[in-house]
Length: 189
Image 1 (tube, rainbow, N blue to C red):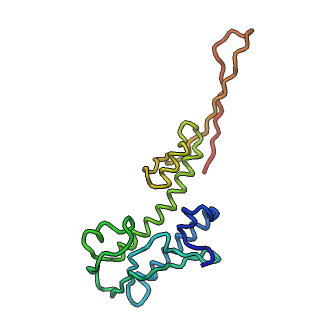
Image 2 (cartoon, rainbow, N blue to C red):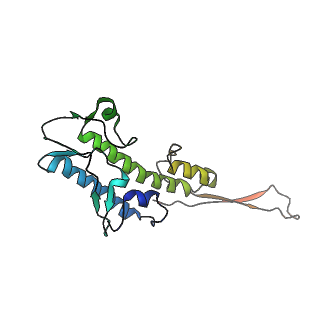
Image 3 (cartoon, one colour):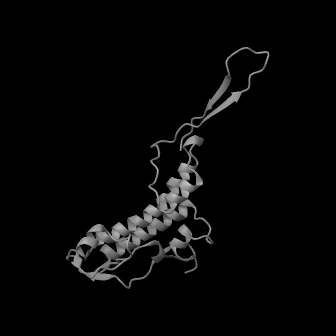
């Protein structure tokens, strides 16, 4: 595929960063593809290995889901079926691991993991541009979250008000306590 796989764009060093409108398009495309496989085709197709390296991107960044080697066909009326455990550790739904029953819901769990990877980039980005420099992460902290070695930060539900404190040095001829200026900007998202 001309634009490779989603994981190359999320984790690779050679691919340019994807703008948010393209990321959104990719997530919508993957969700639409899963809807087709799960509900709109003549049989239900449970992929069982949805992950960013199996999400291929064409020249317009349209999604093509690949690697159907582990996929199972099921009748729409039939619920989860016991199968041999297959897929990528970390992307498999807990109920699939414990029961061995593949289902549409276990594919949705794996899809959620891909969305979480995209979301992680957004949250780390917002954390890095926090208006209060004391609440920004170190680059080590940001990298640990991006590598899923540390939990994502809890960001406020609304954008904090940027505040800047500028301390004016005392002049020898002025006898007053240390002067300071505080500026606040109210900005919407």
